[in-house]
Image (cartoon, rainbow, N blue to C red; front, top):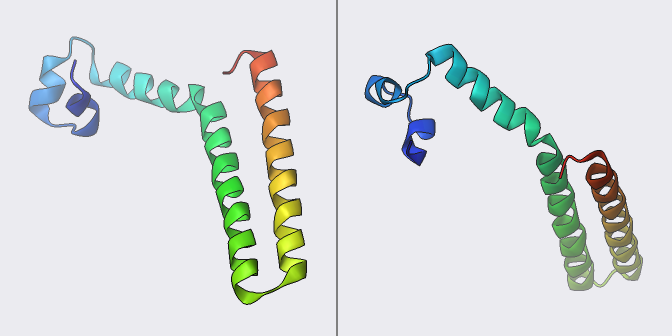
Length: 94
């Protein structure tokens, strides 16, 4: 089964699979649901990047309170991310 099978649902690709169309949809749905923990962690990663960028923006405009706020935001985002990752690991989701 090639990667393009999951990207392009053409009749030729669907005919090559040995399972029915309903089962294929179920498999794709469960892949999305089972990776929900990874989606949450990706959101935390994006929030961390944006928080780090806010420090750079604050430096560019010369705002001391913005720099301090950005550093606090980075610490808060990373703290919640590591706490959530530990919870996911304890639940067996990662």
